[in-house]
Image (cartoon, rainbow, N blue to C red; front, side, top):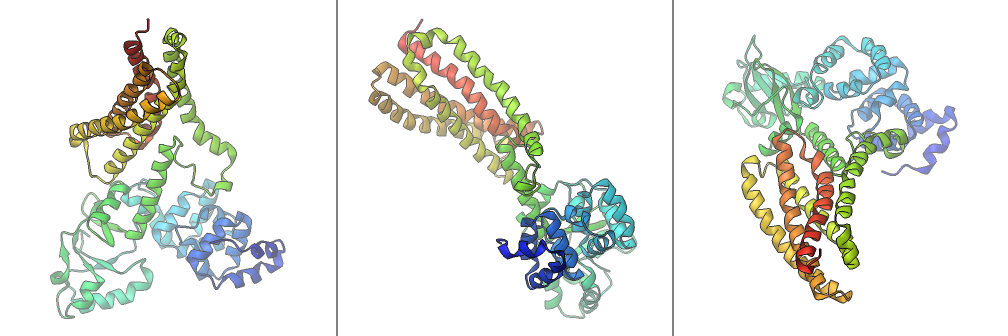
Length: 450
């Protein structure tokens, strides 16, 4: 959504904030979230304070609203606490995790006892686990109730729960999971039926410390709307919904894209213009310095083959072309393998099959591009031996880069490192140095250089 230009002018006149908020009250919560994300923090906070409390809660409950913690830090503590109390448990916890220590200490005591207890429970779990993204507001059913009694119970508690499309039948006293039942199952069943006849025994569940990406894969694989979260003793402590999973997938994809570009995760946690330049530099400089040092090996290779370059100066004309082609071929392979690993289409057990497949692919691609390179080199007026050198080098570099590009992500996963962290930056640097070694070795053989 694009911010209307006339929104900014009234906010320069504080008495008109309430009038502006009234005009915006007709917008849907997701649209208001987009609008507040684009406004300066002080203006967005002023409008948030002027909105009716139910609407302010709906806006802050939108995952698309950026800077929620910063907005609430601008508000009166009582108003901020009232908004936090109205949020779903998982969203409330996410906001509190991003508050500064000062504001967290100021707001937590102002929450309702129930809300504070939920936050303290969820804060015990790491961020990127099922426990860190779950909500505790789920429908609990006893195994002794009938379908009609279950429906009546859902009607009673519906306003207090984040979602009611799934209920969980728990063992009395222990809270262990006996089965799951969807609202659809209850609606189509006979009211006199015991709920144990309608429920799905042994439903798909996740452990409280299971990685959030694994949770997302399970929900996608089994086509679920929600999945229960179990403690180590089998107790149900919450559930993760499909909308939580969408947020997880967006977050994970953003991290992977940043890592593929050699940027540390967290660089896009804030809108582009809200990121201080110092923070942007800090997120980028580490990898750039590391790659700069690694690229010095390319200079070392050039110095080692200095006599060959002096003997045939035309060899230098093709260096950018060759290492660029190798880097591109390797990056294509790395991207393909990382995606396949993420979708679990391949695993470590498939390493040899992947290696042989990419070896063949690289050879064919290299042969095609090598033929084009041979013709292009002749058009530039080079000799046939030099054109053949370039052509064979392209073939060798493409084969090498696709082969090594398939192994790096698998090796990274084998040692427990995110493949996206190493793969793209490493393949480019590696191909630059090794590609030159391949090039000059072939040149020495074909051109009979000393």
